[in-house]
Image 1: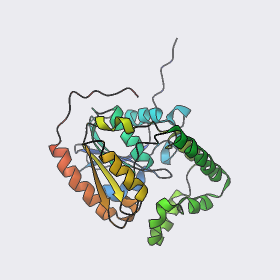
Image 2: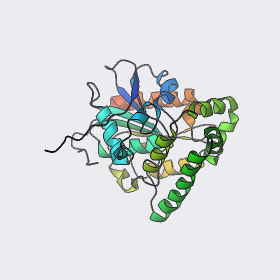
Image 3: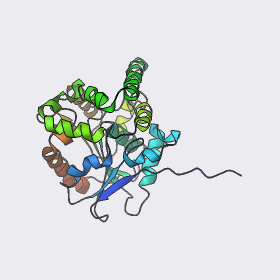
Length: 284
């Protein structure tokens, strides 16, 4: 007799009334759903569901190997959203969470009302790029396993991607402190299975995005600014906005501006953008 497949869900916290439009928040690597609280509190007109992604936060206790892949994480996220009132949602993701959000939007267009990506990417386009990134990622995981967490975090936030955080020393100190108690094993598995080296190449799929999409980048984030412009040129659904004087982590560096831009876009798009009943969900 065949046994039923176990349904895996993720830990989350919610804020606001469930009878309001729902925003699903997906954090970045090393983070947790609680990272989004300061932004969610600035958007009182919405119902917020802030997930802990595989290997992070309270989801570290839900770690079958199958969850550490884009299809596996997508199934877990969608299973978590099988609740009354969550028929259609808007996804908001940062970095790793943005890449997952894009994957979900392309696989489940009937369930996703809107998409917001902060520092997101459709993935790497060549096998040579993936091979190079896999080698770098192996070195990162080796450091994560062998170094004290404080030493690893110092090196992580010393990457050029995060240099703008040096302008906010107290903010950077708090950010590092909030990451110190992460589960090393969970982080390594998430880094390997949900990293950009293992992400499917979603560039060819961008033209079929069917929901309004906002791409938020920091003015000083040259790498992801270029990616956002390239994405915008491939889909009429994507709008790019820039947060002044910020790098990769705009929602941390300038939460007030981030929330203002997001609030204006949500107010416009959640009211005026029509549903597309002819678009079918895709297989994971």
